[in-house]
Length: 120
Image (cartoon, rainbow, N blue to C red; front, side, top):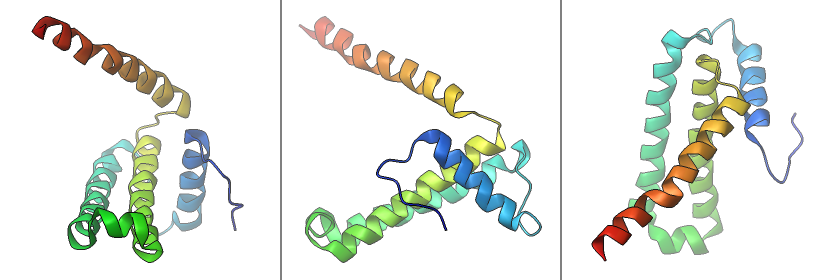
């Protein structure tokens, strides 16, 4: 079993994903780019399951009902697990992902500011 951490970083998520795949590699598809799109489809399915909880239970239950909240977070974990599978399938390292994530975040921090300034 894996030890619970307070915060799981991208490197650890990729490591866990590969560890799970290693355990079942004889019956699972290879970790190769041509199978990456399958993991994206599975990820979208899990997003749909999270959306279904929001639709069926509502935001208040997610915030106040421990059972509903745990189920919702579990579905979000499934999304992240499939994201790790996608990254591993395409050979995207934690460092590459983090670098481009931060580049995009920095862009996003200024992109709407410019639109707001233009409106004024």
